[in-house]
Image (cartoon, rainbow, N blue to C red; front, side):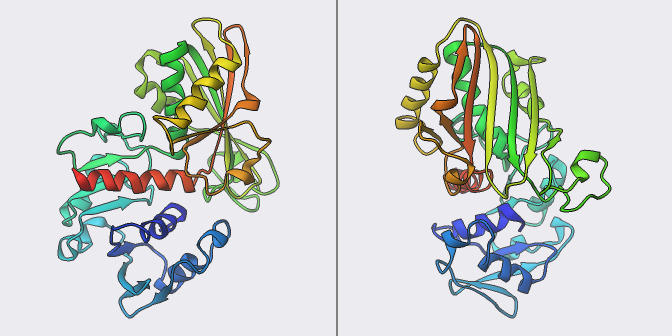
Length: 324
């Protein structure tokens, strides 16, 4: 029940799905407080949902939600509660073996809210969601950067060819950083998040090379954390297999945003900043004003709300796994 878990809980309140239980290290009082008050989305949800503390957990819009603080998923009463699906958002259980503990506890399906280890199938909305493995009880959703870049690369490869690509995501600071200078294995990640522009290492290139085998050894990925609380800008620089014009690329993504990828890819030519894409549900909002091309060298940029957009993908995947 961190940033993604709490946002998911609130979004699910507007769906037919029933949240029956949550598991986290924090107390139910603290959880109720953080569900009610949010430094980013407070105005979006303020007064929309009623949250109170009950004897066994929470009351969300009058419905009982049990709260547990179990360290090991296998000890959770998922069978007793009739849990259909667990969304694993802790970031601590990434392998098929560890995620299976939820199944051992009685859950029928597990959805991992990030990229899992080898052996955990990954489903990206708008890319391979029509090919969900039959009978697979555990799937991963990828992360916010993966959902953005996979959609963009898929159509760039299909329409223009991609010889190599360098992706940098300018990203808001996260809970894995420090507010003041502190020890960290990654020295830079330990620096004060609200005071500096901080380059951090990411493994996005590994994920993209596994999704697009033709790009093996041809992807570089990096991320730059900046002092904003939410929002991201993906700069995708690639070499096409043939000369291409910026307007041609913009026309492609404008068309996709109006047709087959409505709600997943957006397109704008307005002078927006990261603040303007907060609460935008698209995995990527292509900024046509930032598209540039010189021969085969191309730069494509897309905004995304790294929390709200990604959590909407989780809601959609819950719909999908529940229907299969």
